[in-house]
Length: 287
Image 1 (cartoon, rainbow, N blue to C red):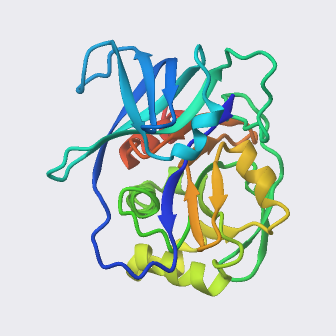
Image 2: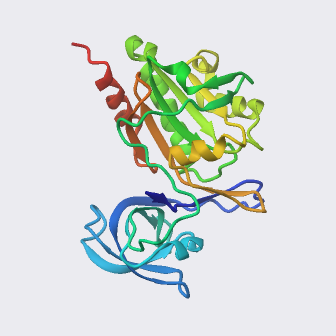
């Protein structure tokens, strides 16, 4: 499977315009044709619940740079982004090719989509206290890992998933059994900008007065620049860093079981804290 998705998060931006708000719908379909001149891809897709019936129609790509990676006959999943502003603009983004029509095509980077039962490598990171941590140290507990970037200005992306983790942290703390058997990790994909001090400040913003206690249960950490590519590939995080310090990225959240294997993968930003809590609770039934 190949992830082509890219949602822009712009660091160091000087604009004061509010970021666009989008409603997101999941799409699955087949590429019919591409049109580089208009930045569109025609898709023959299944029904999109809450948005439209199954049909074939052109969609604007949020990131036209991936146009050359799409080929007629490719089967893909994607998000349809519908602007909530007056223009009502519609884009496709977060594209993952699940079936390639062009047999001799080999992408530059092959991404892995976490699948239940996959063993998770023992990635090493540095947390908000400057302390080395690694994923295997959480064996015996359910580990929830999501990917963020502290300078991300888009409220529906990094801030949204971090807020959901904050809600989850509060919910878990109300259940001593689940709290003792879980750990949360927000992993940054910006080793150049997200220092331990910056990660700690970012975490405190979401934890509030519970920060001293919560940091023992919820880490904010960053991998080294040589670890990042492998980490991102395993968890299906598409990343592109531009010369103007823009980082485009996909969203990825994974529940890892006490045995160090993937339990469930949550692409995009449509999952809720309640959904994650229920999935964790199923690992630790009360009876």
